[in-house]
Length: 466
Image 1 (cartoon, rainbow, N blue to C red):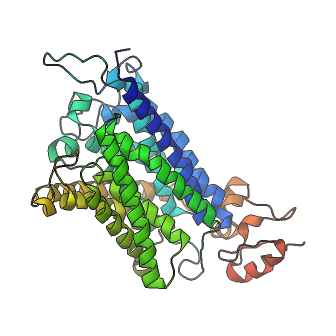
Image 2 (image 1 turned 90 degrees about the vertical axis):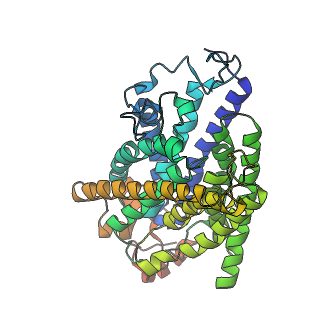
Image 3 (image 1 turned 120 degrees about the vertical axis):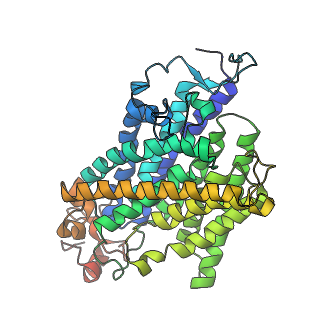
């Protein structure tokens, strides 16, 4: 093993562990927001993505993202170069070079540390999509979609955005090296990518039964709050870890992540108060995630004032954007579009507005005298990833929907996907009863309240007896 930096290696591995935590955190966040009869399926979609994509990443995903560029166009890496991570076990990456082109001892990190860090990005990107299709998609169909979408969409897009020439040494992605758009930790590759895919799938599988008519309230808001808190905690690895070194850039991105997220949570709460007369815990949790999403691409390019501006914009605009699904008629169950797609676009474009050369990225946006030079680059990057992901997800979704079928039956959806697909229920309130099929907005504290639920959505199939 080459002589490496112990400090940088420790930080990257710690960050990888923090980001890995984000997928179970997402399971809690999403799981709490669905109805009681769907919580296990919702959480299984995140854990299924974790298991599947981890294996895929080790076999061909890393190679497609960071292998030699195929064809010199910056579109995809060679999937066979590092297949099964061959040749990487005793090598290093990101080493500094002297004037003679030789690696400087004590710099760089093990290649496997970089593999681990990038793997957890791939995992959570796929898991994020699941929130758009909650309650109604077969688990097997979801796993098939995840397999092909990760291969055809995420791995190439990761190459576009994250494969810098000075990392791979063999030619990298077109967004990173030719377009020179700034996406420090994945606003395009992760959030716009997942959000566009979620929109495509939501349109293909259609609306949940009762959408727009029956209240579909979160069954466990404490789960949502727990998930949001763990996501915020793990996100410091997501953003500050993307410095891939224990240095000043990591410190700056850490602080910007903290400040922007706090501003977004406040902005969402204030928006709710003005619009609805009340601020809600669900709203604050959603605002936190929106702020995390928006600061992800921009955390290395803005100062504190810029971070606050990004957080406020995300908190206000994402709070307003989640209502679009009712006006436009698509059922994005858990607001993947409103939070991740819109939040990712906000953070990506605002680099072109509030970036400052005093930050590590060293570019000026429009408001700091940089003109439109960086803004158009950011817009092209956001638009390219959004269109590509939407098309790929749409084609894959249609193929799966027309062959094996993506959606469960109407009866199964009414009964509850946990029971019909997984033969499990999250909660048992009385022996021999199914607690998971109770009403959307009147989840019972005791079995005695179950008969009222039958009047709301007709989903209770058994008489509950105390």
